[in-house]
Image (cartoon, rainbow, N blue to C red; front, side):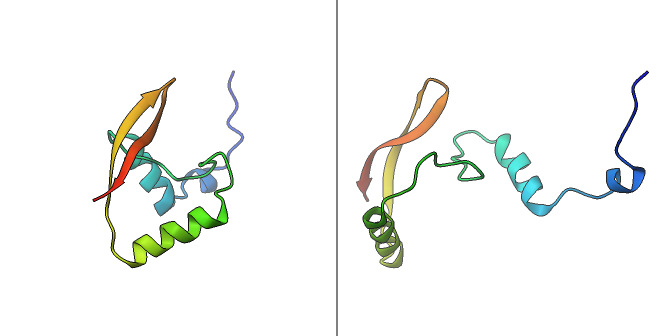
Length: 80
């Protein structure tokens, strides 16, 4: 016999907006998730500043998506 330890009240709480977002993104192809746990390293401060500066300047970046060992990453980045 299986017991359900979650109350009916808790089970009736709808999923949050962010949960729905992640569920939708998980069904899409070529989506790079920057959700919980990613990236796996601390981004160095100079890279953060350069990225924010380019966003503020309205620059676009072109890249290729490459899958290696089950993980997809952006490679061959260039300013468009």
